[in-house]
Structure formats: structure tokens, C-alpha cells
Length: 81
Image (tube, rainbow, N blue to C red):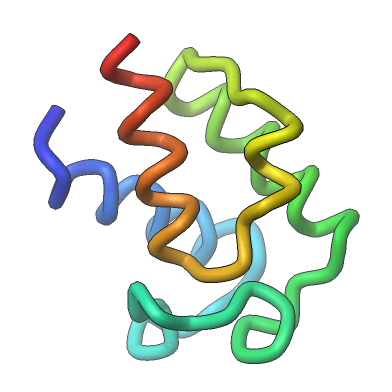
């Protein structure tokens, strides 16, 4: 899967499930401060991505996520395994 496909899937998941605007979904957007997602939202997002992509994520690595780009990287890493 190409990087742009990952970005598109993650962004679509955020737009559909968290009512975020596409223009706010930049790689440098901070999950809490810019996107206003709390820890429960983050877990919910993880579940949505696992369901959509059929992957599992290392919860310890997920705890280190601060920016949207970190999520893209995490998904890319999980898919490449």
C-alpha cells in the first residue's frame, strides 16, 4: 500500500467517525490540541483503523502518537509487517 493510500484511509476514518474537516488533517496536526481528540477518541480511532485495514497496532507505540503523521507512520509500519 502506498503512503498516499494510508493517508487517505486514515483521514477518511477521522472525517467519518470524528466529524473532522479534511482541511484540518495535516501531517503536523496535533491529535489533542489541533484535532481535539482525547484518549478515548484515540482508542476508538485505533479500533476503526484495525477494522478497516485488518491490522493490529502496538498499543505502546500508539501511546507515543502526538501528530497525525505519527498515525500515518504507525499504520505504514503495521501494514509492512
